[in-house]
Length: 139
Image 1 (cartoon, helix red, strand yellow):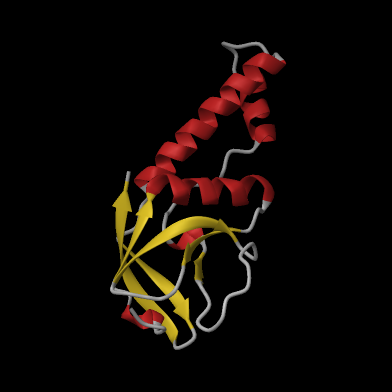
Image 2 (cartoon, helix red, strand yellow):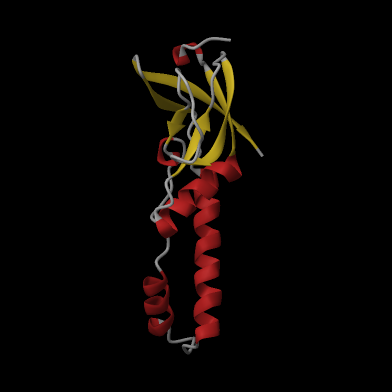
């Protein structure tokens, strides 16, 4: 174990944590990150966390990775766009219930695309500079 985050070679990340963080930030700019807490080792776990939500840490501080560094995902579906698509569909008539269903389906397609967009490597910002690590996906 070390205070030096550059000893990290791989990060284990649950795919649902990464997708949840992306979605929280897309929906409401929640400040969700994947956090790695010291002491550091060659293999570490990154867990979903709200940036700024931790208590007092000494030195070294935890590392925070924006979920966008871990997953390539399309833009999050906008409810207004979903409504426009529904209204433009000659096969369907608009209703609030159909709008909710269509938007829920668009969000589920986005989640699947985000799960499929997992990267193999990511860059972590450390006090010593950028450091590249391998990503090991769970779930």
